[in-house]
Length: 349
Image 1 (cartoon, one colour):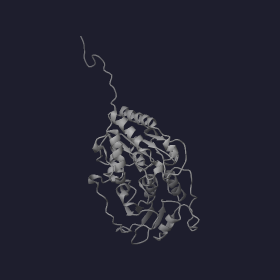
Image 2 (spheres, helix red, strand yellow):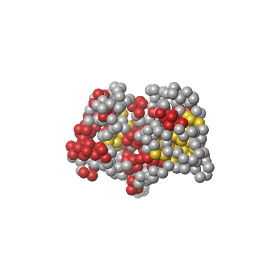
Image 3 (cartoon, helix red, strand yellow):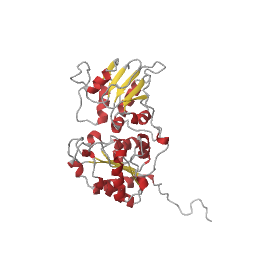
Image 4 (cartoon, helix red, strand yellow):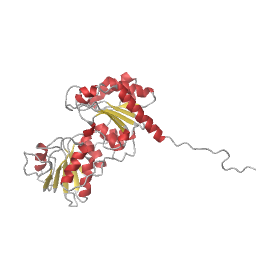
C-alpha cells in the first residue's frame, strides 16, 4: 500500500484487456471503505479462480491503494454507485456483481456487454440465473456464497491485510466518532469522556474523521483536553488512515469502515453497534481482539436520528471494554519472566 506522502492514485481508467492480451473480469462494488474490506474474501476467491485474468474493480477512486493492497485486484476504474463503470477496449469476459441485489447494479454491468454475468437473481433481469438474495447473513458470507453458487471457492474469513511498512502514530488509541448516518453516531460528548479517561491513564489518543467531521473531532479534543496534534480529522486519506489503524493499540468507533480496517490489520477494537446487529457487520475473525457492543435492537442504519439502541450504550461499558483490550495487549507484549537459580553456572568448593 502506497502511504508515503499520501499520494492519491491517478484517475485513469485502464485499457482492457491488458497489453498481453489477457482476458478481464470486471467486478462492481462501488461503495464505501467497509464494503471494500468485507468484499476482500470474494475478490481473493476470484483471483484464485482466474489467475490469468485481469481483475478490474469498479469502486471509488479513493479506495484504489487499499484495493491494490489486497493482492486480488489488478486495477481500479473510478465508479460511485450502481452506474456503468468506465471501460474501453474489448468487453470483459466476465462481470461480477458484488454491489447489490439489483436491478440497477445488474443493468450497470450489462451496459459493458460482458461475455458472462454473475449476480444474485433479480425479477427485473430474468436472464440472470443467480441464487436468491440472502437476508440475515454476515456481509462477507453473502458474497462468498454467491461465488460458491458459480463454483468458485471463497473463504469468508480471508480478511487480513499486510500492514504497510510505515505506520502513523504507533501505539496510539484511535477514536473515530463519525459515521455516514446519524443513526450510527454515538454522542460526541460520550466519545470525549472515553477519550479523556484513556488519555488520563497515559494513552496517546488521536481523533480521526473526514474534513467535514473536523469540528466534531476538535470538540472531542477540547472536552477531553487533548493536544491540538491529536486531531487528525481531515488530514488522512484512506492510505494514511489505514497506516494509522495498522499501528494503533486500539480503535474505538461506530459501525463504520474504520472498524473493518481494525479487523483487517488485527488491531484491537471497540465497535459500537446501533440499528444493525454485529452478527451481520461485526468482526468476522479474531473475536478475542474485538469488543462489539450492542443493545440488541434492530432499526434503520440510514436514519437521521440517534438510534435508540446505540443511545443505550454507556461510557462505562466502552471504557471497560477498552481497558480490557489494552491490558490484554500490554500483557501479550510483556516479555516472559525468567527464573534465576542462585549459583547457577558456578562450581563451589
